[in-house]
Image (cartoon, rainbow, N blue to C red):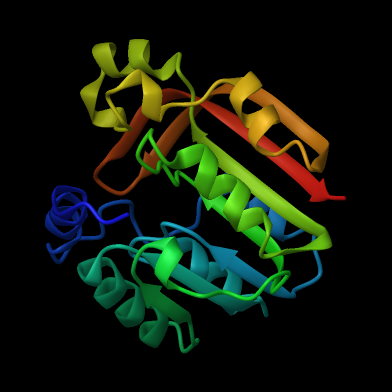
Length: 208
């Protein structure tokens, strides 16, 4: 699947010099990675690289992908500034040819794929995770729409189908033992486009 409007949207978001979501890692991701021994990790929809660079700085072998060439440029620059290396690919998942069970962890941090493909992408990506491997997930919940109405600066998709419910996440990651699955209110301060209170789903799982 390739949608030129989807690609253009993210290229436009990332082409400015400022980092759209900042250069610091997501707090939940940082908290979870800091509890795990470094290994191979995949970052889908990684954008400008803030989370991938944090992982690489802490000894992880990092692979990432996004549809945006502009995102990769920013990620490569951030990696260079931090003296780390990322294996960063541009393209849709179907074209990237990752190996079965290639990774020890996959981190979905605001990886809001289009509604029509998001569950399929989750399940496909799990094929690339080793048994015993970890999933770390944070993304906006369906209840986040109410927060957006109060404060558009908090960001996130504006169509309900691109947001998540606890039941949907549980179903998409049913091949994992659920170590954490919750919906929580968070105060975001991530760059220009995640500012203020929002509602997120957090999930940590271990693939059986």
